[in-house]
Length: 423
Image (tube, rainbow, N blue to C red):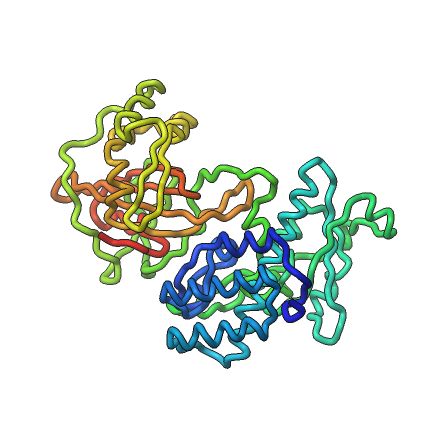
């Protein structure tokens, strides 16, 4: 593995790569920063089998300790089999795919090891180590030797690798290690300042401006380990929507329709807005909200046929629906808003949706990024009134049910991410 700057891989790195979902992308900017912790992408690869073959080759490379030269044999075979017309030279493109995936996997795996080390209450520190030669970036050279607690915010943006072909790494240290080596924790006045730059980013939709820390390449200003595993050893339930890739959404957004759950309300306008599929008719409006917990659980039980039932969507993915829905509703009074009237639609919403989208959501508490599947259904309330149902599933478990009322133009915000199914 000398090509990528590390020795043999380890299980956490293998698990990180294997756990990624294959996502087609036209450009490397389609998936941003922490989203890469859950998505396996090869820029410009939009055919599912092409992506799957590259994913398998990378999985084999890290599991078996294959070198870049060996990976290039797989690269040539895959390109020939699919007739893939990629950008750049063969050596450059294969090296980018290999080195970036390997280094990010090792970084994520190292973070998982640090979490285990800290699980018993041990105080864990991280020491930044750079390769001090003529190829070392000046900023990375300055960060060499910085020692800070694992939970210090510096590691949110500067946990290596910090750029394309960055060879920097980290060491985990305990108080015993510090005493053994005669090292001390970096003092407050010596902690490198995090200065943010505004940089142009070329995307298929035009030029955007993004904020990136100085010394860090665009796209690397995040902690891949934290995005993959979280801040703590235990997973924290995701409660909020966030970090969805906005595809197929034009410029010119406006606010409409008051949502009944914390969901973004920006919607599309104009000729580029995707058409809403035909909606079945639902007479009347939801009845008065039910507030009795036992009654809510009974209504859900009747609607889905039990307390914990697994459904299969049109793509073959399974979704487990349980009384956690009611638990979520009971946490805050604002969630007792009559959505139980739509419990009977849950089985069809998963097994026969009008659309399925995938996107990414990050937990504010853990920092972990999860892939979210969004099921969308539209119900016609009248000539000019539509009700949109949206169900989110994180890790094959139902994580939320939201509904919005409004005209058809009010539902562009429900259709964000990457659409993988349309009825």
